Image (tube, rainbow, N blue to C red):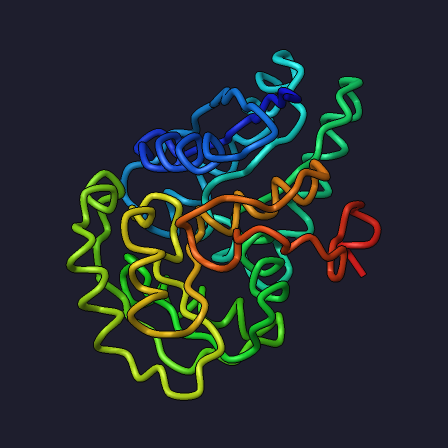
Length: 261
């Protein structure tokens, strides 16, 4: 088996991505992964705290560069999307350049960019969303995805501002929110548009119930990490996005220069 070091940049109050990403990738049949996190202070999911959190990015990337990681996941979707359309390309470009200055040639992914890439791979153009955010931030996520040429047909905001509490949202509440959406005509459902809102126990169950592809910020992140590392897509019981055989190179953007176009 090959071994890959994954660097995670996470909000200080986030506990879910460090649980779900290892759990997902531990199911991979031909690769092993270790996870190395650096944290940015953030408790409440507000525009002010998100901006303050993003300002800590360079320190976190320097710490992960010291660990010689093979890939970096900037794991806060709304922190990127709240900065305006196309921001994931700018963040990924800046992180790639910072790592290169430290002689680290790592793949760089943001949760925001991973969700966009995964939705295109499904392929899905008309999508429905469940988010944990307060409504103004949820609206920014919707606008961001629409700026990437998706049509958001239905969405839900659970209005949880405390990021620690987002990590405690019961799967039953998330499923109830999804059942309340009009999914007619939707190509896919994003059951958790946030790496802090737990999704793994419900992704496959939701796909079985709703009969359309279901993904989350976590499964999108795992999918994109595997593609960037040129590893087979073969993760069981996590939705069709991660089903064996989804190995097309279509839509794969590897360099910041290409992504920024």
